[in-house]
Length: 463
Image 1 (tube, rainbow, N blue to C red):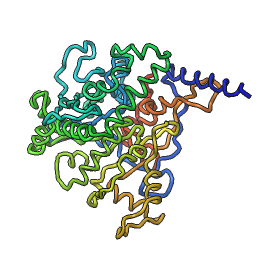
Image 2 (cartoon, rainbow, N blue to C red):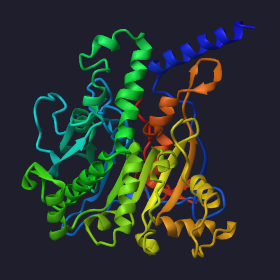
Image 3 (tube, rainbow, N blue to C red):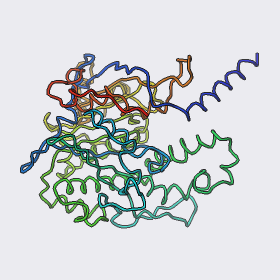
Image 4 (cartoon, one colour):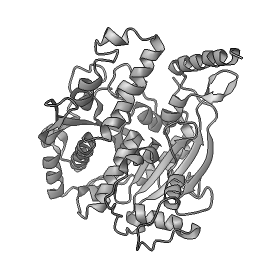
């Protein structure tokens, strides 16, 4: 009677151990569906793709798309980990048969790849307009937010007529130092906090740091008072990126600025720039979504409205459904004004079916619409025929759900459990998914025609 529980504990321990030795290779990619919010038919999802979003501005023959890249939970600037956006930029480069180094970019914002103690000129620090004091759970004790996010710029030139510019936004080091470290810095294994951490078993210690101390704590922090500061900081970074794209580079901006000043400058400056797109991971998807929704409902016309007009937001795993539980409120939630189709931003949500944290968007919103009370007087059509158009108008977005599977089994010969960590962060290493992102989709299929990337061998680099 007791043999089975003991055996299961051994298997579970083995599985946890295997989490730390996962390979980059995956099983054959399966794309189950590419569905659009606007259609009840399967596999009708269409979107433009990064390459086709790229456009030139007067006086230039180079087509460019500027990409705002937002990370998810975890200590992204940890030198032991893969640098932020490295896998994505590598995936884009390999989409054009370009050979790139294993470490394409520096892990630390605005630092040289070869010597990270040397500061480059390709970054800017966004501060709070006025340092914010946040009261802690300890009466009479507060933490101060001043520096908010760092953003740097990485350029990937494809050929004489096409380039991608990546604006990487980092908030983890700044927020870790100011908010998280005072709360949980006594517990992690990295910051000389060995009193407790050293007593843990090896893999329990690793999991505590990876999942909790440098992981879920980011989401907890974002869902609290610091969330507004993060959104304001990223709005400031977006303003800075718009100015940089228009020729007003970081050095001219001052290398350090606050989000109020830089956005005032951007709104008062004629910023003729190439189009912007957004790529987000995990928690970054929720943050970008919140910023866009606020922009679409604040009844103001700002640089942010221009940046998201007709754009595409690629969510590589998202927790919109899960974290929206925090959005429950007695206050009225505004819907955006009706948006013309050509100006409507699109969300392309790539969801691995075995990712513990990801929830597809279309099923979520249909579930929420059908299992919530519509406010008295709301005549919105919530019948099956009208639900999708109703959601599109209420949300303001086009939505495409890509349901995929690519994670490999952790244990050879045991197919019933795959690597959940790779399911969460392995999207950029799937060549066919990258081709979708670059070339776009037409009725659920890769839009090969006219796409430069589609002509390449598209062999992604293997570790």
